Length: 517
Image (cartoon, rainbow, N blue to C red):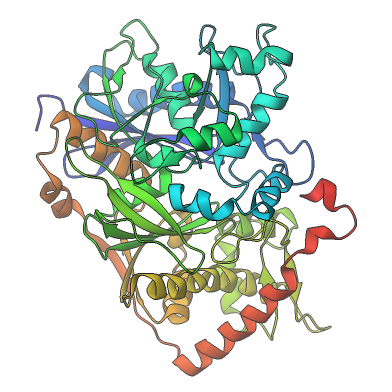
């Protein structure tokens, strides 16, 4: 361990920004959180203000350190984890964004990806990137920004010269990790996990792909340098004259789901985790070989340490899970997420009600950007408890969709699943998940494993921890859930779920589909 005491992690998520500080045992010693605004300019469009995100980052870092009585000089390093695919375009000189960030949930480029599929380019894209051709990823978002960006608080960018200025390196493109690293250190870098989510990156060569850049007309000069997730050369240092008042190495970054994989100590092939946040993301470590999927999963970079080969993962991406709970509150069925367990327990079943929370389309294994949220099976006797329970069951069923696809692709039987994220505090949901999949569900003591993974990546890079065996020793089980529902009943309910999903597909092609897509 180094002479310093702690490692910090910025966890920049879809709904807010958190800063956590961990000690050498992997325990939280400081924590602060701030939400940011969600912008919906048109149906299916989702945007964030990058300036607000950066200001919130400085605020939560300052608050966490102050409340814990920690001096910034005590930080051995800082790691970053972030909402993936969300794309920012900013001025390299002024640091001002030229448009709001396009969020991973944004569907405005659905027509573009459908044109790519119609042209037969989806197979080529998948072979290079491991990704489905979908508006979820950064490539079409970057293309849209370069074509349509209007300036925000600056007259230097936007209009006809946006692409010209990007090609000259005067405008920079990146995911949120790049935006934060730039503001912290002045460097324009990203890590391999975030790069692997752009649909511009060859995951086999671990490099930006010239043919993909040409397809989307994205200039290489605007893109960040790609570095390991845990980088012993460091991305850079914070400015000692800046808001921290100290020179602290920024030495690690991972996309949020890969960070959770790392924080759950899924270092070996066959290890699996599922994170329940705004969306839900299931990753299976496949080792140093990229495993192709025939069942709608993604092949992605899991993590890379300096001087070591990249570790790959299969991923199932579910766009809406925790957001479905937020929806229940939005429509006044609940006042607080904690109510869902009690309401769900108050009925023996959903009475045949199924909720398909396809509010922004469906991800793996369906990949239908025009699917929309659906409630089926209601009768005059349906009560809010049935709808709440059906919403929780939908989270479990969507995960089973992924598990079945993953077992088919990888040729393994997943017997133990590590889970994390805010929703896993709900014991009823965890038990539902165990019953639906027929798999033991293991919840760790530190459930903020996304931030922990970023801290681990940075801490390993700066020598705060000696190696991954130190991290394995830190990992402790809070509770384990074993299946209690008979398989015949679980299978029958799951089959009906599949029928409900069928009714949600392709819905946005109806009247108003141009705006909904």
